[in-house]
Image 1: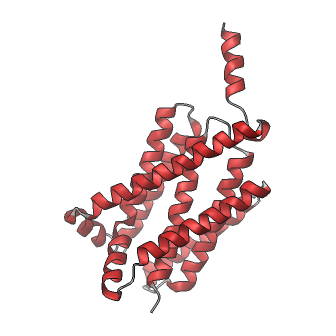
Image 2 (image 1 turned 90 degrees about the vertical axis):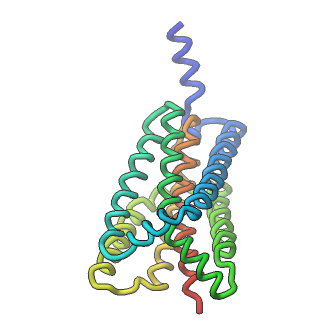
Image 3 (image 1 turned 60 degrees about the horizontal axis):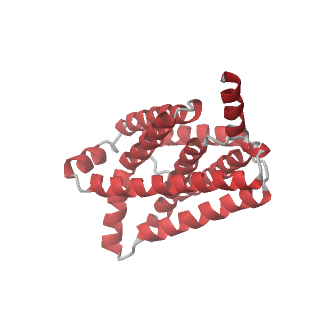
Length: 240
């Protein structure tokens, strides 16, 4: 009986690259459906959070000085812990808790930026939120399609992205210490990093995930989508 169960589990949980096209397509559908659900949950949470004035005022107050570094530290710890939950456990409950934690963390982080974007749109008569969202989804879809169609392995980007994010964190810290604006060039650099992360995450989806890891795969893609949206929105708001 135990041997039968082990064989059944082995047949159910396999590297995605080894399964047939139908099983692989099912995995892709599940993954991107979870990305869509996570994005919808983000929108719902953000709508609720932006209506809570004390929370908005508190988050805006944290953007001043070195307190934002503390926020970034807590955010990075929370998202890293959530990714560990989603990727190291075969327990679906743990995986979903990790996904919800990541969505909630991003929703809280976005409160100051979206508040400012809404105010910017009201003053300038431009719906920068919709413009940035459409641009982000278009880029995300195009980058994902490149990998899914060509099946190219972008795992070589891992070291490049690691160095890029270390440089980005250093620039952010330097900007806070010396009080200079990071500007449009930095946002463009971060958009390139986010695009690289989407290629890397989608490549993992094709080549390195197992058939039971669609929740963890969706978590990585959702986080990359949010990073891309963050900096595209800043670029749209920087226009005169």
